[in-house]
Length: 403
Length: 64
Image 1 (cartoon, rainbow over the protein chains, first blue to last red):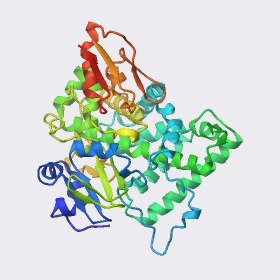
Image 2: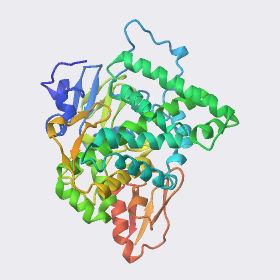
Image 3: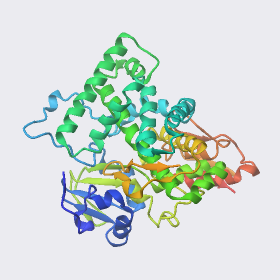
Image 4: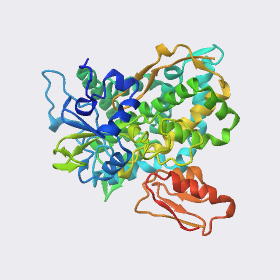
C-alpha cells in the first residue's frame, strides 16, 4: 500500500514513509527540538514521542497506557471478512506482551526462566555452531548478503531449538514473521499467515500432549496455575508471540550491526584488536540501531505534556528515537563502541522489558564475534542495493557485502 | 564502597551482571542482587559501570 508522502512530520507523520524507514534519525532530531510528541491521524489517532524521558515515562505508566494492542500497524481484516471474536483462537491475545496485569504478570513468570541470564548461557554453543555453519556456506566465495544469508538465519533457528520445533522449517517461520510484522498492511497476507501460525502451533500442542519432551511447549502444557492447567488458548498466544517477537527483532539488530561495521572500518578494526570491549560495544550497537517500536493504547482522556490524548488513541514508543536523545546521551549520533554511560531502552523499560533480552543480546554478540573471526575485513558491495524494513521493526533486509 | 539494588525498580534487564558478573547475581526471573558486602578496590570501576548502565536507575552506591 502506498501512502501520501509526508510534508509535516509534527502533525501528519507516517512511520511507513520511505524517508522514515530509510533514515528516521534526522526526523526525530527535528521533532525533538520543535514538537517532541508528534501526531497523526493516518491509520487512526496516533502519537509519537521522541524524547527519552517521555518514552521512558509512558512505558512505566501502565495505568494510562495499556498494552492491549502493541501493533504499530493496525490489523484490518480483508474486505468482506469480519472478525468473529468468539471464535478467535487468539482470544487472549499474545500474552504477556499484549496483556496488562494480572494476565501479564503470571504468563511472563512462566517464560522468564527460559530466557534468564543463566539459561541463555547454555544456548551459546548451539548459537555458535549455527553461525559457523552459516558462515561456512559463503566464507570462501568473497561475497554474501549479510542480511539474507546470515542475520536472518540465526534467531529463527535458535528459537526453533528452544521451542522444540523443527529447525528445517526456519524459512517458513521467517516468512510468517515477515507477513505479520513487515507486510502488516497487506490484510490478505496477514490473515492467511495468522491462520497458518495458529494451526501450526495447535498441531504442536497436540503432538506434545501425546509425547511430552523437555522443551518450552511441553513445559507450558504441564504447568498448573492454582491447580488448573494454563489453557490451550493462552499457551497458543504465548507461542505465537515467542516466534514473532524473537525473530525479526534480533535479526534486524544483527543486520544493522553488520551494516555499521561494513561502513565504519575504524570500529571494525577496533572490535578485532580490542575484543575486551565487546560487551560495551554490543550495548552501543543496540542503542544506536534499536530496531523496535511498540504501541500503547491510551486508557482514558489525558493531557500528556500538553497533548490532548483521548481514550483509544495509540502511542508509538520508538525506543530508537529515545536512544538518540541528546538530553539522555552525550553525542547520541556518534557510535562509540566504548560508551560507558548507556541506559539505553532498546529492550523497552518497566514491566514489559523484553523477556527475551538476554537471548537477543547473546545472539547479537555471538553473531558479530563469529562473523569477525571468519570475515574480519568486509565492506558494502554497493550501498544503493541496501534496503531497510521499518514500522514495528527496523533493520536491513538486503545487505550485500564483499570481502 | 557499598552498592544496593532496589528490588522495586529492577525489571530484570540484567545489564549489571553482564558488565559486572563478580558483583551481581540475577535469579530466574531477572531480579538482581548484590553478592558482595564491600566492593573490592579492583571492582569499583565495574560497580560504577553497572550503576551508569541500569535503565531503571535501580542500582545505587550507598557508600563511596
